[in-house]
Image 1 (cartoon, rainbow, N blue to C red):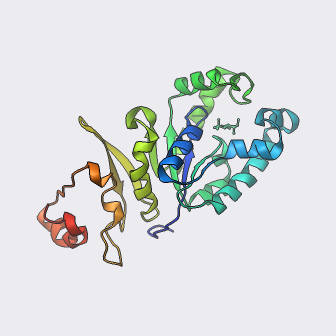
Image 2: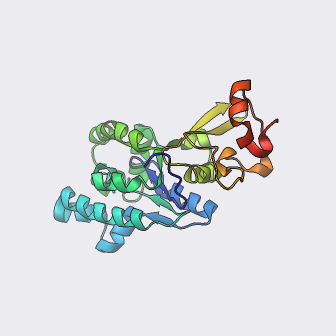
Length: 245
Ligand code: S3P
């Protein structure tokens, strides 16, 4: 439901094969002090054999059914501050997409050629079921792009952000924001700055300054408020210590 603040949302990485979702989830969980979970690894554990073997034995459809079940359980039971990496095709399931709504969805974007090279260079590269033919792989990337983008509360590219751990304060702020809030990254010569966009970001009923107001490490950044008279008159009081800066 848009506009409802949901504390305890997990941060879920989606995106194509080779985007680096598992590594990102592990790094972010370490930064947040939460648990890292990986749907592919958990499914392999449950099956007792590699995913590629499952494709060979029972086909993609059977694999998708098992994946859907596991991912829905994972999302429904996810603890706050956990970081979860989902298999690239899991969001093809409508049930998985519905379960994602309770969490923060981060698209880890990767260009198709880089993804192809990474996957081919990985230990299971030669056996990955959907990464055997370059042309098919690239076409699958194109066909999924809109789906991934439509689900994302924020999009990260490892090139522009420079380390997932550096994004932890902003992702935590996003998780503490009302659902429907989006996080964008503004580029400046001095670096990348998180920008939260959404309704209700300044409203808190307990009178404390909203933690979403400044999604950067406070000890290492300076805060400014830029406004015009109309907006300042309407919202200045919500800014607490920032008002008048
Ligand atoms: C798949 C992605 C893989 C794995 C399976 C199918 C896909 O996971 O679940 O081979 O359909 O995109 P990663 O995205 O973790 O590589």
